[in-house]
Amino acid sequence: MRSWLAPILTLLQIFFLSPLWAENNLRLSPAEFDQVKPMLCDAETLEQLKVIKKTCDFESFTAWSEDLDGDAKPERIFFGPSGECGAHGNCPIAILKEEKGLWKLLNKPGCQDEGCLGWANAFASEVLPGRTGVFRDLLVGQDLGSFYWTKDVYQWKDGRYQLKAGSTSYYLVDSDVKLQKVSKARWEQCQKTGKNCL
Image (cartoon, rainbow, N blue to C red; front, side):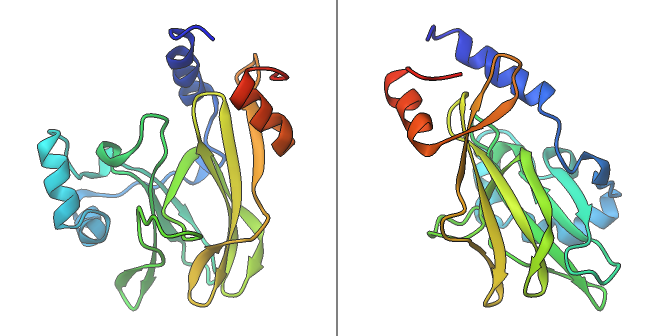
């Protein structure tokens, strides 16, 4: 594939793959954001952002409001900050719940441990209707390189969101810049050989 085509397709994905949670976009005042900012940007993150001349403000996040536990009080879901996101739009994800006027994290943003919910792409993720334990299941998408996407189910278990074993599904981007589900074998063949792609 021509080297100039991949960046163009990535930009098209960003503009045309609308977030599945878009109707729940969160709006926060600066004072409201100041309450949760320490959980989203710790000292190390702030230092890294400073080096690349980025900031940790509300505008550097994609944020949603979604009731995950059915208590009629929405949790807050943050993707970002943008300075921490990868080249393909995969960002640290942080999920916060309010209890007695205080916010607490339900996951560790940006974690790399196997099976933990740390990174996600807002354009291919959604809250699922089913619930495992206290909180609703999440379908979390990641862009693994312009044409190659995966989606994984995360479920609430043992006090945290964990990857559901065997839940990974594979997607290729078609000529209409839409994700098309394919078998793992086809996804791997396309990725390795450039053959049998959409």
